[in-house]
Image (tube, rainbow, N blue to C red; front, side, top):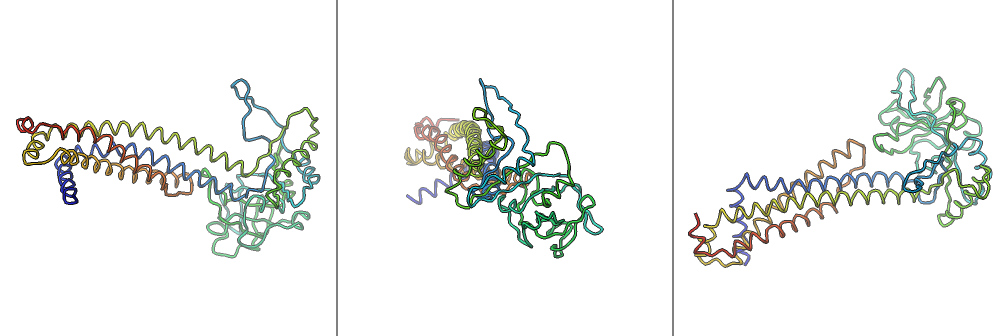
Length: 414
C-alpha cells in the first residue's frame, strides 16, 4: 500500500512537471486566496497585539475621566454629536481634592505640545517632541516604568521644580545617547530642566513614537504652554481591583458635583476603564477577522473552481494514458487516487506560497506602521486546513471522472 502511495506521488509529480506552466498558474490562483486570508489576519494580529499590550500595561484597576465617552450616541439611526465642556484645571483639581476613595491615587495631566524642540548643549532635536504636564501619580497610573533614575515625587510637584522625565529614545538614540542621562540639563523654550528619570521603551502606535516625550511638573507646563481651552485628563488607580466598580461610582458622583449637574441632567463627561478599552479592541479585531475570512473564502472559492477546471482538462488530455493504465490492470480507485494526490499536491503548494506571501506582506505592513509583529499560527493552521479542503472538493469530481472512463473508449481517444 505504501509503495502504491509513493508511486502515485511520483506519477503526480511527473504530471506536474510536464504541465509546468499550467501548474504554476493554478498554484498562483490558490495562493492568491490564501495570501489575502493570511495577510489580513497577520496585520490584524499585529494590531491586536500592539494595542492590547499598550492598554494592558495600564492594568485592569485604572479608570480615566475624559471629555467624551468612547461610544457614539445615536438617535433614529443618525449620530448625534454632543458637545461636552472641556475638563478645566480647576475642575480637575477640585475632583482630585474631593475624591477620597480609599487606597486610590489620582493624577492630573495634559498634553502641552507635540512639536517641541529640545536642546542639549550644542545639539537639538527636530520639533517633534511631545511635552506632557504631569503630577507624581501620572507615570504609575499610565502603566509606565522608569528604568533609570526616578519618578517625580510630591516635593517636585508641590515646589514646581524644573525637572523632567524623558522617553527612552533620548537615552538610546537621541541627545543623551552614550552618556549617563541622569542629571543632564535639557532646554525647552529657553527653560532648563534637569533629567531625573528615563522611561522604559514603549514603541510606536500608528506611527507615533511614545518614546519621544518629555514630562515636566504640571504647574511648570501650565506656565510655559498657555493656550485657550486646554483639556485635562484625570486618571485614578485603585490598589485593589475588586473595589474598582465602587471607586468608579464614587468618581461619577464626585465629578457630577464638581460640574454642578442636577439629578435629571446627563453626564457631560466620560469615564473609561482600562479593561473596557481592551474589550473594545477585541471587538474591533473580531470584526476585522470576520472580514478577512469573508474576503479569503470568496477568493478561495474562485480558486477551487479554477483548480477543478484545470484538473478536468488534465483528465481529458490524459484519457489515453488512463486507458493504457487500466488495460494494464490499474483499478478504478488507483486511477482516482492518482488524480486526487495530484490535486492535493498542487493545492498544498498553492497554500504554502500563499502563506509565505501573506506572512511577508503582513510583516512589511506591521513594520511600516510600527506594529508589534507576531507569527499568526492560527491563520497558518487555517490556511493549511483550507487548502486541504479546497483540494479535496476540487479534486474529487475529476478523480471520479477519470476512474470511470471505459478503458476501450479511452484507448481509442486521440
